[in-house]
Image (tube, rainbow, N blue to C red; front, side, top):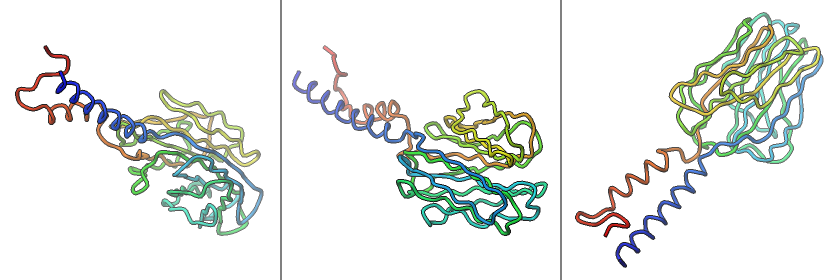
Length: 253
């Protein structure tokens, strides 16, 4: 009886540790913010990162800035890692992300190549994200269709994140099945935008429909910190490897 009792406490202790490890891998949403401006070279707005170890920002400009590029995006004076810019109909869209962004309220700054444009920007943060390789399988969207849809390779326990900005103000966005909308913003007189996400899997289709617009955006897989096999799988492997030949399962006579 003593042997079985000791074995039980050992297994239970390891199981509790694995459960805590698995909980640390959960991704949660932190903060959101957005802003737009009339004709200007740069756009500055405050983003209060109250709970997030990863942030990403989506910037765009309206069609009045034909040929205008988005050159830099910073947060708390630190540069974001930028994706290749998208452009259609004189509009530019660009995504940037940052690992371990500063906490508290700091400025996001979007810098454009000329003043001949009306900039728009939106930011969001997440907690529980891998700090080494946070994103993978970045997909882009550059269309005039009324359906913003991406298909992203991901994994169980991760998130698929998406965002887009249109050149039509007052858009009504409708998230698709399993898609959770985190931000919907009307950049009055300039455009509209959204952020959305859903749980990861082998292949995830994430989408939002809208009335009509020229739209540019990105989607990607966001990797959870401490990712790995589900706790139940690890527990089974642990039992298999620690049971000695001839030993009895817990509760056996």
